[in-house]
Image (cartoon, rainbow, N blue to C red):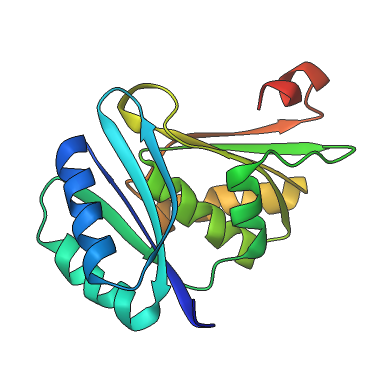
Length: 178
């Protein structure tokens, strides 16, 4: 892939249509399938990488598909892909932020925003947990940063965040669950 690579994240509650669309995109465009998951009962999540102009073309296709929820992410923070694939372990978590998102797409987008705009350690992105494909982001940050993030969420992600919590001095058992 070229150096100007963007990601296109999309999920659908029509799995067969999702795979058919994925096949069409893989045949018609120079893209990389970064990851695919079947999430929740009856949903699929796809993460594609391509040059910016290709991602824009794919966005135009997805825009006209009613059963597709998508978002394009440019400038992926390196920590996001890292914790998307594996849980990050840090020695001491003083303050923990947990964000429950409506979709895997919104969780990935929020994690990228947090990594670029706040002093946080991304701990884990769990996609497709619970009913309806909700996803969870876990971060470690200062109490002040977590409160700043909390105040911004309703403006930046008004429909994407189901709930959130700030936990000070989290129990080790809780951290092992995330």
